[in-house]
Image (cartoon, rainbow, N blue to C red; front, top):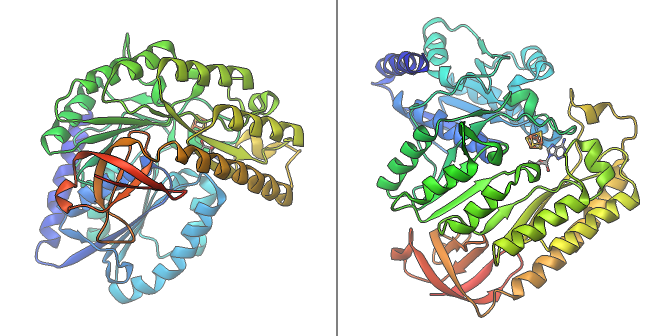
Length: 457
Ligand code: 5AD
Ligand code: SF4
């Protein structure tokens, strides 16, 4: 059934192409939020390119503007509404089509606001209707009607949509959609629906094709990758082992696992598979058992510490990274100290720190013991100080060692140097010939510079 739907959408792509084929048209896409959104944007780009739109990074010259939105924290919303002000003028000048999609479009209060204050938006699509963008664009071009294409039920999985990848060396592959966990602060389960896993054979086919195209690194994506369920007796561990066998692929990474689903078989698969990077993102969120319970995380401080120790034992030299939220409702100084304590004990390679943001519709938004902005910021800065001092110390251990670095391109700020990543995902900057781009090379680390390392081949 889903194959028919994809075929139908491909027909719409052809029809739009026929309308556009004599024209010089450009699209601009702004992606907010996580890697899953980035991967969705690659699919949107694939669809638009096949409709004869060419990519531009200059929004002012775009005939088609897409915002792929996120709603995980408040600042993403501010950013969208700020950008929409700018877009109104561009639309007047270019008669551009404005399309907004992604997580934020699954929130009723946002749709109301858009309709009321931003009536110039042409197409609104949600997380379950991305595959229907060709049809939406066709109807828009033919009728000039405004289109609101949102589904509240979980979308099916559609394979074989066009895709235009942002990179040529590293590829992102979504393995599952949605989340069943309902952490009390998180909006994701409401906007992305329940967990749906892609079939193992579809994922393996995609990775095999990527390997043939020359991709070296695969990043497996999902809101909760280690609850991947391909079929009976085929979970995340089995998937890792099968991808590990695919020739040509040299590195496998994944985000994000949930500590509660970190079963023995997954730890063992990571340890056994030589291509799986020994770098694991293990979101802690809080170090206090009381707050973890209130967050509905389903583990305690002690269980997290035990898991981290077990992973370190079974996977020598593993690098652990994490996410932490400060200022969750009811968080006392003592609770916050527990978070600092876990950070000290585990010694994370990297910590992504977030200030708790109230999300409409979540349980935590209704809690009556919210923390003041002032305290949130004080705690955030204290955590940041600890994390930075740990990273600085941790970086020292790299200096003088030889690291395998996948060179992924020239450095952001300097055309004449190359940049790449270690197995543990540290950025390394090297002065070397461009011929090394796309290869894993041995690099001697010569200097540590806080957020990156310097080295030589
Ligand atoms: N406020 C702050 N941070 C949040 N995250 C998710 N929801 C919220 C929220 N309401 C963080 C979590 C998650 C990461 C992707 O975003 O740390 O792991
Ligand atoms: Fe949100 Fe928790 Fe699901 Fe992650 S596991 S997406 S934090 S609800």
